[in-house]
Length: 115
Length: 113
Image (cartoon, rainbow over all chains, first blue to last red; front, side, top):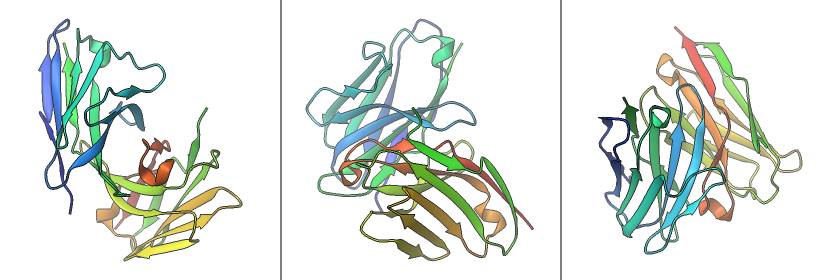
């Protein structure tokens, strides 16, 4: 089946620095990718939707200048957390949907810890 | 506004029993209703999904029942096994899955041997 890969799976960064998380669709072209955030023992919250070659659409309350999303190719989307703070520590998960497809596949997630 | 309400928050079922998790939605524009299984520290994995044109879908031990008029859908896990112990999320979206998913709060399921 379709596979979505995220990298890194775990990252620790210092407060004030930026960190990039990659999301790749391995065996299909993902025209749309979604980024979610999940705090421990809570549900997933949609942060933004990105379509290849266009600007991401952010959900209400998500700072677009802090969470930079780039969907430069049909197989890669990146989330960059800029000027990270401890409260940004969370589980970040991407998902992808292929063109004309009705199924959304999730990556394994990336744990971000800001110290 | 919570658009997808999920219950129960936690559930304990004996091995071999039926696990039932319920969800209700508010947005009548939703037209794609998937269920996801998530193990600790892992991303969610798609279990089964349904669209409003059918009332039931079965895949192996997993069945979705869908009631469009009541705006409710449920997941039934037959012959529940200890390996089914996980957190289950219902979700919904517009555009046949084209839009981002709105998730329920999750159900922590424990299957006792």
